[in-house]
Length: 121
Image 1 (tube, rainbow, N blue to C red):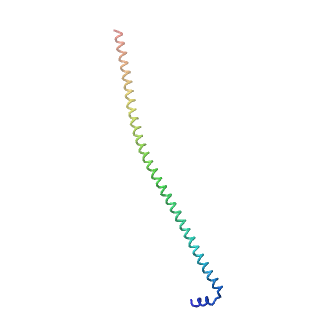
Image 2: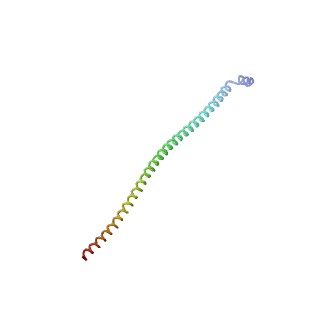
Image 3: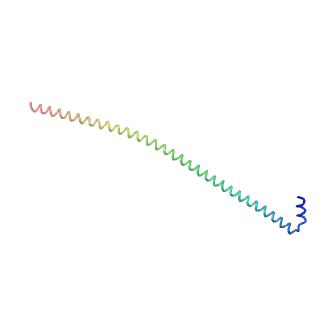
């Protein structure tokens, strides 16, 4: 180390200035590289955070859509129950109508028979 210091002192002033400039240049390049690396890290961090925010927004939208699906499924279930009730009511009404038609036919037949019997008398 002392040898290096002695060599530095014995070197001409221009050479010492050149050495100082080279050391300063090396230090500046090193600092510039560190800053570039820091910029890359910050850009990567910003990209990850942006992606994270986008993922959170997508999850929020997914939850919203799932809630809408649940609501629509409930409405569909209620509509199917109502449809089943109406179909059942239509079947009962249709059966009652058929029974009334059969009764009407029997009564009409009985009325004709009575009319024929009265006509013969």
